[in-house]
Length: 81
Image 1 (tube, helix red, strand yellow):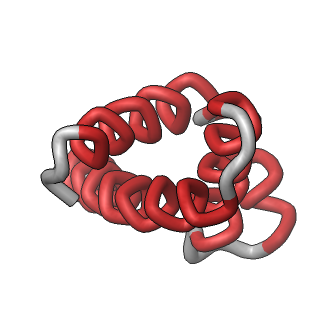
Image 2: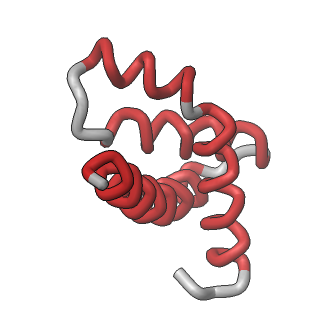
């Protein structure tokens, strides 16, 4: 039960961070790939973890972070953010 609660909380957090990350990356400009990488770095930077765990989370959650950024970008492109 606690594990599910924690998982749900991090999903919400990553989703909210992805929204902010996409907006920040769009302001930076550049190619889509550069903006996506910047957005993923932003999310990892803002996670409430110590630096070592941020590095580990960035590696372990790479696919999930990419998907969160893509979803947030689709919402941004449709003017939902």
